Image (cartoon, rainbow, N blue to C red; front, top):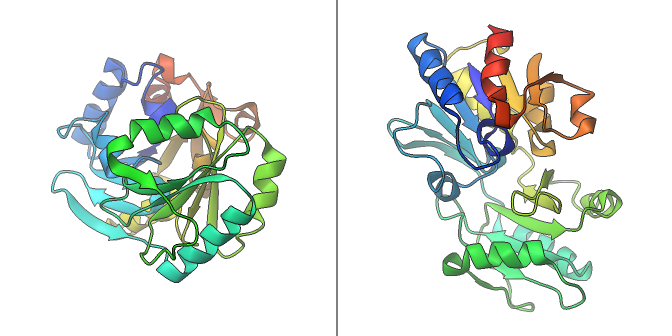
Amino acid sequence: MVITDLDGTLLNSEGCVSEKDFNTLVELGNKGVIRVVATGRSPYSFSKVIPRNFPIDYLVFSSGAGAIEWDSGEMLFTTEIPAAEVQEIVQELLLHNVDFMVHEPIPSNHRFLYHQSNSRGNTDFSRRVQIYSSYCQPYMPGIVYESNASQLVVILPNDIEWFDELKKRFPDLKVIRATSPIDGYSIWMEIFRKDVSKANGAKFIYDKLNIKEQEIIAVGNDFNDLDMLTHFARSFVVANAPAELKKQFRVVKSNDESGFSDAVEKAF
């Protein structure tokens, strides 16, 4: 099995899959290797950049909150944060005066309510609201949130200390750090149920197929891939990954140089 991240890994800087990487995916399928994309994107967001006939076998989406068998479109599993817990998270975020979004349960998790503080500008947050303007509306503080949620997203400046301090407020949840795919700089704090991760999403699939962990390679580029990269012995990061990750994992060519294919060639 080969597991790859999407943005910044399989997708190049123009948001496309190179011909070489596409052909590598086809060849892997011909050789009986299971192909998995593990992305932070929702199924809706994934469908905006990847066609339905794309040569993969499984999609692990929303950082492991769910998974789909690609050919059939069958939803294999989903996860949610209970409504009461969502309300507690929202109240904590309001106390910290941060900008956040509460996403609906899967499969409608591209829809969300948002709250933006008035104390500072946050262009990355505003751009995401604009991109999803047809699928989002403001959250009204004081109104109890009565539905389950797939995740919450907090958009912060590139301030690691701020992220780390806020993360401590949610010890019973999975808090993932990701670099904004919009401006490539801001920090996205993604809050999920405790058991959510790309590694766990992949585990559901390889357990189902009786594939051993030593028969798996993983390729990524960002901090939201960290649990997946550390889970597998044969992990690679593309050359455009942050220096911190390149110190920990084997480095292959960048996403603009078909780094995915380079990882596959080195592994096999």
